[in-house]
Structures are given as structure tokens and as C-alpha cells.
Image (cartoon, rainbow, N blue to C red; front, side, top):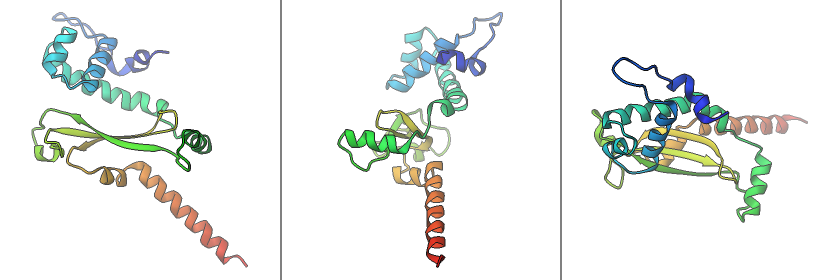
Length: 181
């Protein structure tokens, strides 16, 4: 099954008397092009033969569809020991994941614009992702304003909460073991 088939329920539109609807494939192509390049909405629109006012909604709709329909299918934690062994083979012993953030350029938001100006001086949204030894995503956190530091994003992520819960459970187990005669 292709990606466009999986996204179809959220992205398929009906033709109207005024115009033909964008195909799912074209919406995905527009979104991927915009997300992968620093091109303006006008430039992306020209590339795909649509108006610049079509590009923004297409990107938002595709990103929402990917988040709602594909993320849980693609992003998995995987087998920890396999990942540690894989990183070890690459020369990174005792490594379970690699994490980094990137700033995605955006148009200035109508409100709280100063929060979205990153350290390089442009409006951005931060995407923080974690990958395994094969470069497969195991966690994605997106949507933070460009001004927010990577450490704060991580501390407020669901992954961090899971790690804290795991640490608490290990701590409880250790304390229980210490109580045993």
C-alpha cells in the first residue's frame, strides 16, 4: 500500500463546478517540496502550477494527515538491544538512540511572533527527532516555537515522561529489593 493510499481518507477532495480538486499525490508532493526546501510559497506554487494561497493549506493538511494516520505506523521504539548492538557496530558503544533538532522556516505568525524567531534570526518551528542505528525515526516532537531550546523541548516530550516513569519504576523495584531480607 502506498503512502498516498494511506493518506487518502484525510486528503481526498471532491471536484467542484469552479475547479478540479488537487489529487492526494499532488498535495503530498507540494508539502514535501515545501518542507524540504527553503522556497517561498510563491515559488512552490509556481513549481506545481497552483497559487501560493494553495500551498500553505496543503502543507498543513498533509502534515496533519501524516501525524494522525501514519506516525504510529512508521515511528516505533524497536528492540533496544538490537539498536545498541547496531550503534556499537558503527563505533558508538552504549548508545541507544541519536537525537537532534532542526528549525523549519515558517511565515511570521499573527500572534507571539517574537517567540518564533530562532537564534539565527528567522521565524521557525522546531522539530526534534530521535533515530535508531539505521536512521529510522523512533520519536518525533514538532511544533515548538523557534526560540525554545532543545533541552526544554526534550524535557516536555512524551518520551521524557516515559523515561521518567521507567526510572521511577526501576527505583521502586530497587527499593523493594533492598527491603527484602
